[in-house]
Length: 417
Image (cartoon, rainbow, N blue to C red; front, side):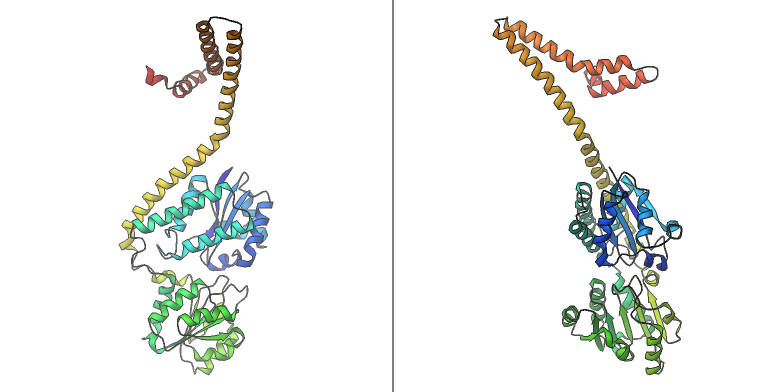
């Protein structure tokens, strides 16, 4: 059984493609069970965020995973395959280590991805698709991410997605403290955005969410108002900044709603930040003269400032990761050798037992103990060496040198010389 990683991300695929293969949170467990019941995977975990959709799986037929992904999302494989990457074994292990450590994120070193990987693992555990290989892989993944973050400066002065959203708004408005901000959704990304915006002390903040109780928990933290989703259209003109990140399958804020809000505001500018995949705000909204619409891809424009100062940290992190990859693969190879080791020990034990039984019978008959022990040792040595000797004698041509090298290495004969 081999490990693989298959997926696409913000490096390889545009937003409209990422939207089409994103997994809704409530469908992940069903998807995992469907995947592992197919011929594509024996064990599996799915990581689906605004920037990436990835399958981590153990399989003997990995080529079928791409077919499954396209079929599950009802997308023609030909349309998505140009954007997919597939990593076998060593590369797959290294990739998941890098992802969890923040080295493959749009914002280098951002810490949110580690929580998303942990959530993906939790869902796989709940779905019953996390076997021995993936369980060990993710144990190592979390340890590597912790080591990278604690022993390098990869997280220093981090420019997070949330901080980038604030920065985008500051391009349009001179002071965030004069603006009113509406957050649509109440998940982790919105919570991070709310924390960053709260630091700028806006005039007003409000949270709209499908579940009012969850919205209230978030709103109470930041002294914000709570709003029902069904009144967004009516209340939208009050807000200068809208930040949305929900798991809704269809847009929440459409062109007509935005047009009415702009008209009611007498064309005062609005900033809308859509962090959702699939998108919460119809792309056509961005064509309105008085609306500045940003998506997750646009955030990449504001995260370059701190990258150069972190390059040394990246080198240190990559060195840590490469060492941990070797360690994990050593565990995998050792695990693969376990059945052979057991078979070898069982074979040796059967030979030992047979020779001991023979010796005990001779002793019981009154034979000389010294001769019995001599026969025991010779018989055991001959039987144990029978296999290697036969292996050497049957080798032919160029294989003779290889056979001799294997036997010398196996019995450490060069050291004895």
